[in-house]
Structure formats: structure tokens, C-alpha cells
Image (cartoon, rainbow, N blue to C red; front, side, top):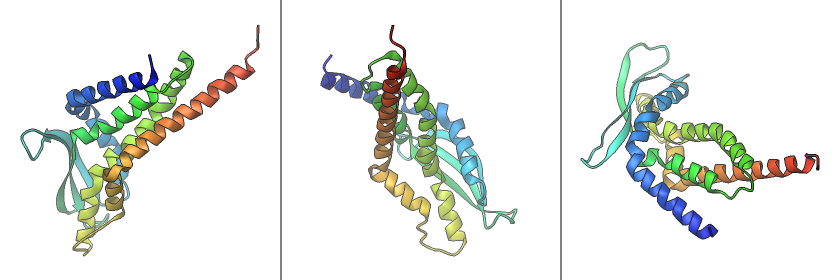
Length: 199
């Protein structure tokens, strides 16, 4: 099959999968996001209660929602604010669709090369999820902390990162990660083939 047809089919399949599986994927991944965000919250006066998929602000959308509390400081036991972080399920499914479509659809000379890509892709994918959806869910916690500290119009580092992701940065990160893995595993496969004894 010609490469342009293959990529067209891969893109169409990914789009169909994203439309049909965005909400189920978000529900399946919610416990993982909860674990990741618990790690992000360490060292901050933030308490994560739950991460769930719930109806969005319109009747046709669903959201991945983080429900949590913010205290004024780490030494304060009293909760000062309740927050809800929201990411639409269509955005949640963006990283797995873009990353895995590009990585697994990239031309490979052998089955072993694809296996190397899959093995290398799993930890990279988990890091991408933590850096994209995981951090976007945490944004209201950082904003509430800044407001409680006396900043009426806070723009935190979390805001800058979230704006970067929403302005196309998430797509760039997903593509760059997949391409780097494809390049690295392709080089590894060539080096392995070069040192194998010839019969």
C-alpha cells in the first residue's frame, strides 16, 4: 500500500476511534490520572478527592473532572477552597490517538522493530499523559492557591504550561515523542543487524 494511503487510513481510523471511544477511555484512565495528580500535589496544600467522568456544561459533552480542596498552607488543616478541574474527553483522548497512531503507523522494516517501538513507547506515553492531561486537571488548584495568597488575578507557571498545551503544544509534544522513538528504535535495529553474525 502506498504511504499516503496508509497514513490516510490511519488518520481516518484514529478519528473514528477518538469519536467513539473518548468517553470510555477517559473513564478507564481516570484512576491513573488520580494517581499521577496525587504525585503532582505532593509538596502543595492541595487535596484531591476524586477524578471522574461527568456531564459537561452542555448536554452533548462529557468532561474528566478533578474534585479537590486547597488549604492556605501545608501546616493548615482547614480547607479554604473547593475546586473542580475540567478537561473535555475529546482532549483527554488526543495524546493516545496522536502518539500511538504516529508511532505504530511509522514504517518499520521488521516486526522486531515494531516491538521495540511498543516497548519504548509505553513509558514515554505515560510521561506524556502526566505532562498533558494530568497537569491541566491541576490548574484550578494552583490558581486557588495563588488567590488565597493574595493575588486577585493569578497567572502561575501552571497557567503558562496549560496555555502552551492548548495552543498546539500538546500535539507538538505527542508528535515529537513518537518521532524520536521511531528514530531511536530504527537506529537500534540497524546497529543490531550490523553486529549479528552472518551465516
